[in-house]
Image (cartoon, rainbow, N blue to C red; front, side):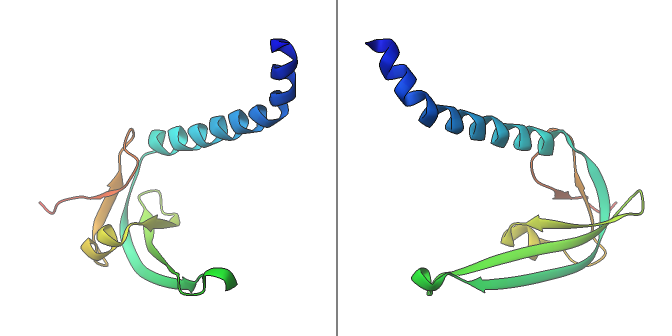
Length: 106
């Protein structure tokens, strides 16, 4: 009887486990990555919600960063970090940390 219940719920539980493992792998990969760069540009976009939730507005804050290796990346950041950064600031994302931070001027 217990085995039959497990077999019935397996198709529902297995996708949840697979998605959970996938999300954990993405987070761990992001934490492992490290980089340094200079803020070239700041951009802000907003988007109204869907038809059902038309009063909701989503905000997107992005920093265009020139990495030390010369490539340019767009980094999504929080509104607070976006407000703290100015064009020309140096930022870094050390290994083991999930979000970037400013490098203090010396």
